[in-house]
Image (cartoon, rainbow, N blue to C red; front, side):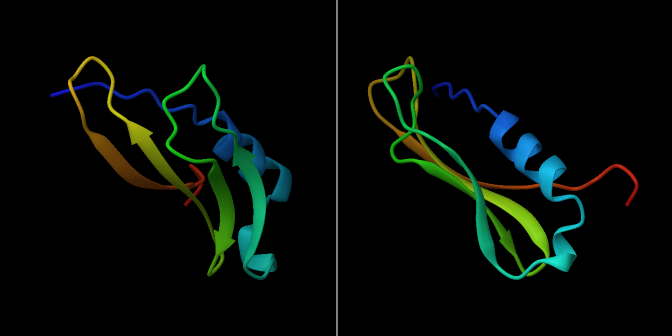
Length: 80
């Protein structure tokens, strides 16, 4: 199998700063940068898309010969 670690702080911080994403049109609101300290394949962008905060994440799997995983995270406030 393999392992992957995801830093969700950029998603949380971006979502908290913008509050209600339905008030905004589609736009980039944050970014998790690729570095030697993480397994990102490319920078991970946090966007408002159709009134929802979403983040696309592409990671190289760790502790395995090879493998990649592609995810889309979506912010859902607890009051919904």
